[in-house]
Length: 194
Image (cartoon, one colour):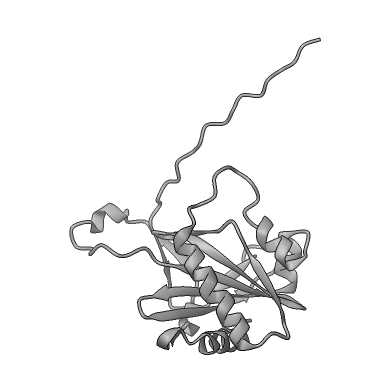
């Protein structure tokens, strides 16, 4: 009897293709100019924090995002609240996800990065998540939070997934960590999702 051993895959270093930007229609594109071209003029920035909030039929699912430099990946955890929760509870969960965004490092390996979100949403596939939810992106921008609604392009076709509506992004001040204000701003952002 012969046993074959599968060769281990070598870790692939991510390549920075450019910077993620948005055009006047709110469509995302990658600026092809490499970040090193801006090295002399760009000031060093602190690491940003980001989170995504999904609204499904019966719950809110909040997950930290890790990255920067033009791309973000979901963190290794996600938490859920019933849709009947107060803005204060939702705000607390969002601020907690932003703290985790700074504390976590990108997940290693080639596993399903959506697994924590799907588990928290009690759904089996990303396709179901896209078909049954809306997404609000939260980016910590200094003393403010930038909340961006998205357009749901469905699970198939050229516009599939969630497309950020950058023109409709709004800032929310983080006055003394007012968690109810943050939760209310997220709920208001969901009203602008398409």
